[in-house]
Amino acid sequence: MNADLSIYRRICVFAALVSGLTLSCKSAGLIPYELIPSPKEMPKPINPGAPGGGVPSDAIQLFDGLDLSKWKSGKDGGEAKWVVRDGYAEVNGMGDVVTKDSFGDCQLHVEWAAPAEVKGEGQGRGNSGVYLQGRYEVQVLDSYNNTTYYHGQAGGIYKQYAPLVNACRKPGEWQTYDIIFHAPRFDEEGKLAKPATVTVLHNGVLIQDNVEILGTTDHMAPPKYTAHPLKQPLRLQDHGNPVRFRNIWIRPLENKQFIERYPHGEGPQH
Image (cartoon, rainbow, N blue to C red):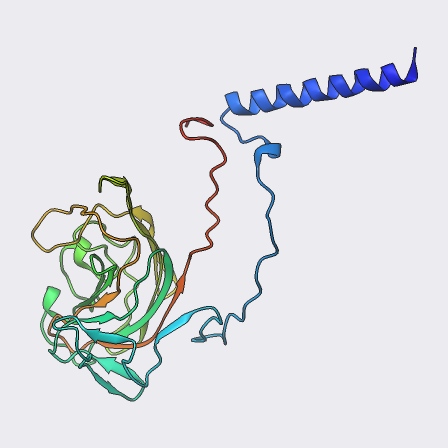
């Protein structure tokens, strides 16, 4: 047998096997290896910050304990009027504060503490909120031995999702939220194309696992989506309780790893 012909036949057999394997993978709902895109560049090195409170080198420090220069009043757009002292900002009845900059998909770190002196109960005890894009609230509340409706507890997506567990520390102790948020997408007609999703870790414990936000998180009105720009300001709520905040930073997630491996409407069906 001609050597070139033998090699050609082997190549043809191999190609047929690969093609058959690809078709088998697709029919089985699997992604064939050759359709998985290779990374285009080396991951960028960053400094993750010191253990126990450091700020990643690619993060934006929204509050460093010194001033609220990156925030403004949610009432009139003027200077943010919360009290700043001893490395923290404290709610003081002067209204919500919002960031001067706007953000879309992001990783957000917030440290907060409810008042050490316990006053009130339920929603009247250590109440505030982290409003992603000014609309979608991750509840801040003193939920340590404090009964309230389940989706109104600390770490709840307000009036939508209760936290998986109650990871709240004692009143007066510092607590952390680490939030991964993907903003909703709207089509050219303003209709919802993809709902927002959020993951929350409270004091390092997973309490919201990539849940789909149903819309705005109002107290009485049902949730709904209204088209808005991809990037919107962050809001911290003044609910009338002297909740404290410190060490707030955010990492915009503009270089995400979302990859469309198949054209729309094709690919594995589950």
